[in-house]
Image (tube, rainbow, N blue to C red; front, side, top):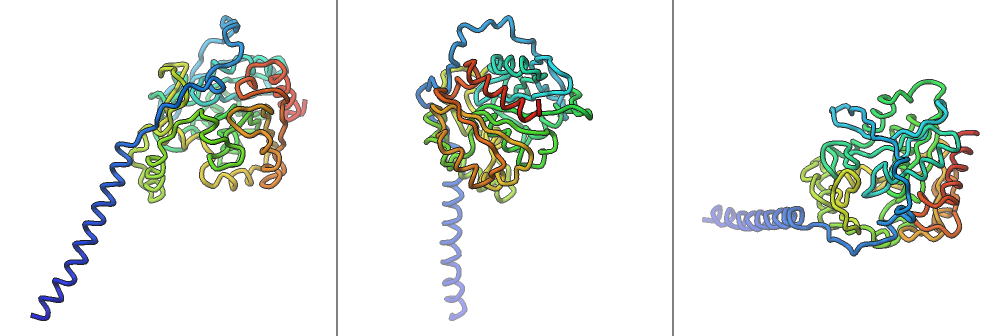
Length: 335
C-alpha cells in the first residue's frame, strides 16, 4: 500500500511537468506559426531615392549573371574602369543593383571597375524573393562571385562597399571568416544592430519586425535547429510588390544573413583590414552622431566620415554625397 502511494505521488508531479512542457511547446509553436511582421506606414526616407524620376535609365548597364555553387543565378551590373581597381557594390534593404546607378557611376568616374550586385533574394538573384536557403549563404555567394567574375587574380585591388543593410553586410564580411576576399571595406550608412546606439527604433520606422517569431527562431537556432527559418520576419515600410527590383519582405534567414549578429561588437572589434564608414548627418534611420564614439570605443581602426546636410537615401544619389564616397574609396585604394 505504501509503495502504491509513493508511485502515485511521483506520477502526479510527472504528469504536471508533462502538461507544462506540452503547454510551453504549444505556445512556442503558436508564436512561430502565427506571429508575422506588421506592415508599417510607407517611409519615404527609406523608400524613395531623391531625384530618381530624373534618372536616365538608358545609362543602366544590362544585367549579367554567374552561377553560385548551388546553380542559382547571381546577378550584377558592370561599370568598367581600371582592371586593377575593383569595387563590389551592395544595395540596401528591399533594393537591387539597379538603385546603385548614381553611386556606381561616381565610383567609375573615380577609376573603379564596379560590380553592382543583387544579393540572393533580390534583383532576380537566387531562387526566391526575400529568402536564402540557409544562414550565411550570402557570404558563400560573395566568394562565388569574386571567383566567378575573375577578380580573384593577383594584382587586383578589391573593395567591398555597401549601403544601409548592405553596409551592415560589408561590416559582417570585414569581421568574419571571408575577410580575406577583399583588401578594404567601405560601409555607407550601415545598419549595425537593433540594440546599437546608432540605430533609431525600428530603423526610424523602416522595419516592421515579428519580434516574438524572431526570438523563437533564434532560440531554436541556438539549439542547432534551423527550423522554419524561411518564415517572414521583417516587412519594410514600402508598398512595393515583390519583383526583380524590390524585395519588401525578408525571411528570418535572409535577415540573419545580412546582419552582424548578436555579437556585433565582437565582429566590429575583429575587423583588421582598412575600413571606412560614411554616413549623412541627417540620416533618418540611424543616429549619425553616434558612429564616431561607438567605433572609437570598439575598434579605432574603423574610420568615420559624416557628410553634412545629407539624409539616408541621398547618400547613393546626391552628387556631393557620392563624391565624398568616391574620395573615401580612392583613399582606401591608395589612389
